[in-house]
Image 1 (cartoon, rainbow, N blue to C red):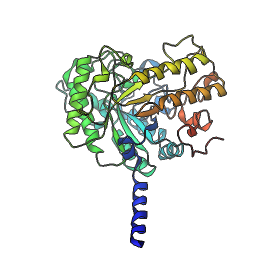
Image 2 (image 1 turned 90 degrees about the vertical axis):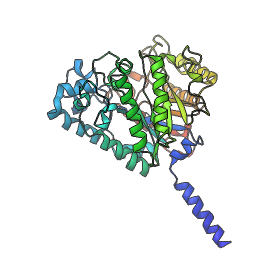
Image 3 (image 1 turned 180 degrees about the vertical axis):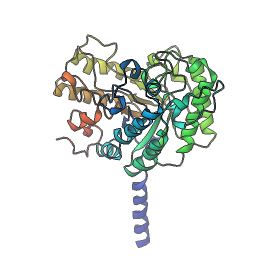
Image 4 (image 1 turned 60 degrees about the vertical axis):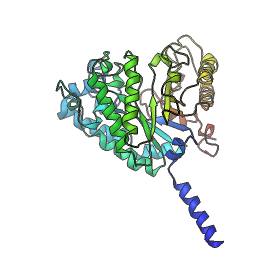
Length: 395
């Protein structure tokens, strides 16, 4: 009997020590997390106070990371990016994320993080434009910090070669232009990025999976779907069963769209597949009041979730920002947060807020909803008790 008691205690200790990522992957616990936006793929609006941007004109930084490095050059830019990576997200941030009862970080990366390009028939060597060394920081996040603090990591291919949406967060070679699906080498490169990441972290317990592409717009839908299937096959051939996340064309998030994402890559033929939505109640809602945003606006999203019959949904991005017509007090903003988070509990995959840190005008410029989850939790606008009843952060 004594042996059995000791064995049982050891078993409990082993299960307790197991990383949260396994429970998420098994569908036992949903993702409740936050994005590390502005770190390994920079966006000026997120960290405009950073010395990284000193002297960089708005006409340059508005185009994203490639344009910024073209302007700065390696002699100046490499050192600035090194300092940015060292300071913008640190081990303390991951410790605080865990303290705040969040179990996952979604980390955006760019295609250049590999430090090479095996699919460059034109020999443009565009990857050499970027500051080298970002992979070291991703390694440190996945292999050290996320392990130490029991936080799962979902890596998002935020910027694909050629750009999948033309916006600054996809680092387009020509701002506003979308070349990703126009050239097969761009798609082949993105498959290599996805396979590389899944292979590199396959045996690291904190690694949850890869989001295969962020917010594609103005791309060939048939080529996009073919890419998802090819990337899935490339990763699964390695024996890796990590979570893989598909994203629709941005305006095809709702159920019943013409591209029929609900029936795309169905289970059980395809395993451990999630589908990403980004439901922001900002753009397209100009003129709506705070009360409408936090009640009817949230109800519209809830209705879409209830209708969905496809792969498990994850709300990869959301926030508490709203159009200027919606003026919140701290109390109504807290109610908005409660409504939104409660609504997302119906999503089997879970959610990750955009974003952990946002330096301009935080936490609530002019009474409006904010982007910085760190500030909103610290001010108890977002209360972790909503998803963790044991939290004591807020009274």
